[in-house]
Length: 354
Ligand SMILES: [Zn+2]
Image (tube, rainbow, N blue to C red; front, side, top):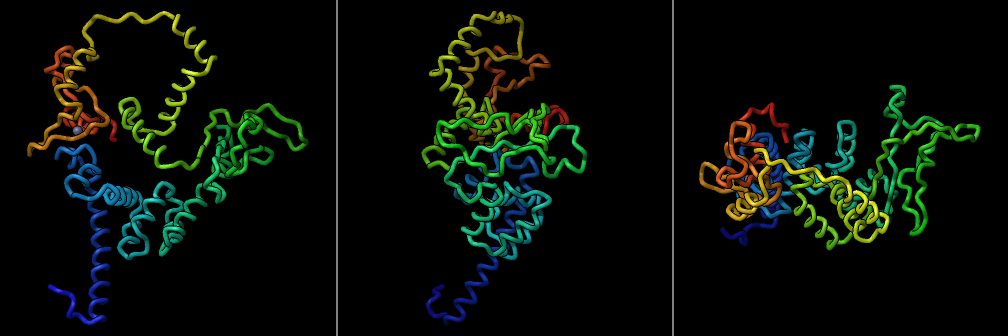
């Protein structure tokens, strides 16, 4: 039906009604996705992830799927998200940006602050949470305070005890060539100026943040994908540590020396006994046969397209006599499907929930 004959007034009323309905639909879709996410349904239907289901089956664009899944996960933890979506107080983009910073204590406050906010305002809010001091272009390396275990309960969640010098939030990375203040901040500075010996930051964690271009992001994503098997969680720390270590192994003379020394150590002899371990030749054969892709087939015949998190699975479990050295008993499964089948085979208690 043509909209041309409508009066201006009717046209706007109808448009606004549709937008209202759209908001309600989006909130309901997010609510449904959250419930789907709680179950094994999409795995059973042959999708490795909810994202794959959203893009392949629901035909969302990758960005649209990402926004809705983020919102669904936020809604699972913070039900208020659904009400705010429905009322139009907050949009999917804001939830996507806020979600990593939400916790039980700040949720109400942050969602209220983000209500009606533009993208720019939400970005400013998020930036204020990161403690980057509003200087997103600068690299920031910040040592996170770790209090000693014997701290009194009242101090546990509070500020460090007086007299302990901690770097200010958002302390910027010193200019190139300058040394980081390494353990000075880990030592107790008594009021009289003497430095005590108590180490405060023993299991130190450091927050690094920096901005990068799309090319860098693409390389990181590529690395994440290629290293999924070794680092299933895909944590940047693991990936970048690996990358930095491999560069150092190549160019750092100290490191080369250490490696050579280690290389002279006794190598473990390989066991010839029957093993759960799948021999390399069998792995190669199975990989080729399964096309480097998860071999799970759903009841309706859909085969999973998962190419990440692939694992070599024993069709007949090794524990009950399934062979490791026979390709017929080995198949490629993505981790979500491997875990789903294990839950069915052994019950949920044997496998940690993903
Ligand atoms: Zn799969």
